[in-house]
Image 1 (cartoon, rainbow, N blue to C red):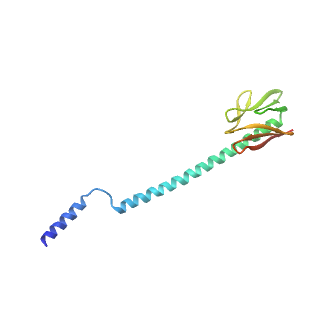
Image 2: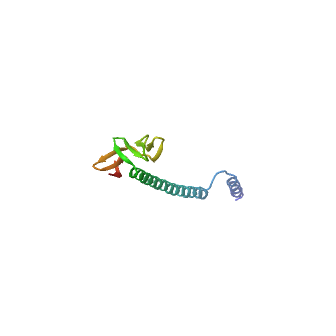
Image 3: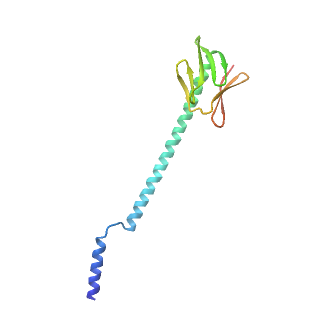
Length: 142
């Protein structure tokens, strides 16, 4: 019996000095890490959706500005990647430059992020065609 008591004391004493984590501590740390990951994923999703909405609004505003510009202009001519016109008695043109719709002279940028963009004239209407799905936006009707 004395030997068992000494062995038990020695065993308990040696267990109290071991380094490491218990199963409960490991599970708690794991659950905290999972919760933090879920919160981070949700916040990133919200941020990505809001930037997508901003890009759509920016594109719509740019299209409206170009429509107003062309409505106030005269002698509008369309080529494949350029629209020439007279605005306030001065010649100007719109062109696609590095995926941006810009007005020259100068460099007034109306829309950015236009991949595969070109201008198209069908009858009396002028369209901006862009993107992999070839989205058509009406710019001007003569």
